[in-house]
Image (cartoon, rainbow, N blue to C red; front, top):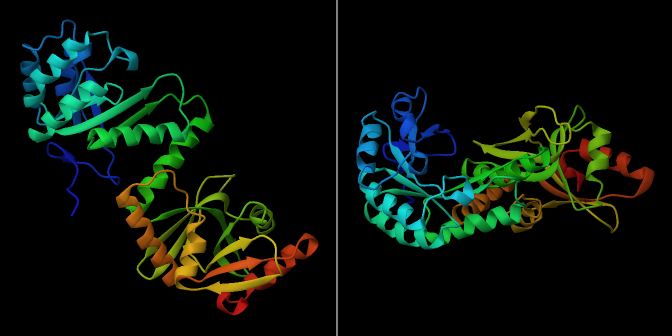
Length: 336
């Protein structure tokens, strides 16, 4: 069983956001009394004269407030006050016994390599972080940082980016949702959420050029880009997302239709591994994390067990929507 992740007495999970109050020595009393904060972070680099011999007393004062304390000596390259690397190393060494967790930059490879085993041996939580102060890197670069943090032994990875526009926010949302949703019992799917009086709520997935967006527009889909499938008891609930002018939708999913390109028009009901394979092609995944992969496989099995999965090859041109409408109006198991 995987251990529960915590900082001191505060459990961390994807269901309960935690608030961290952070500051330097000048903010000490404000941090002790910070209303609503779950955790306190002492930014040693923000102290006027950060010295290893005075750090334990500062951490003790913060700890007296009853909340776990994170120790950080941020590197100048990632937004901290300039400190010699030897001073940063000494601050961490002096403060580690008195903190519940440490936060070190992924880029500080040598420092992290030394501190991580020391922190783990002392029973402390290790957060490895990266701060992109001027832009949001592409998803591939963010995932590379996650991989580096895991290789260094991080208990959790913190990524901080500057969002210049909605596209930057979108990058972070897709990345985070693709990991957190499976761990909370749901799948993030590239597809459209149909909700039509003739056939109810249905998930429509499709290869590029197979006609998913055309059908979504014709049927007035609740959304067309990202959808969520969540098994609950023996029902698969379909959720719309805000993407492509999406509107709220949560309804029992009557089936999943995977559009294919080319070939003679036909609907084919898929079973077992075949159903799982077709649906898996439309999963939104950016990174391979063992716990997430296990969750995805389990959830795909539940979706395929409790709702029909059908592949569809449709005629081109004007016959496309009438053909798809006719087939969707039938029970999916019979439409094939």
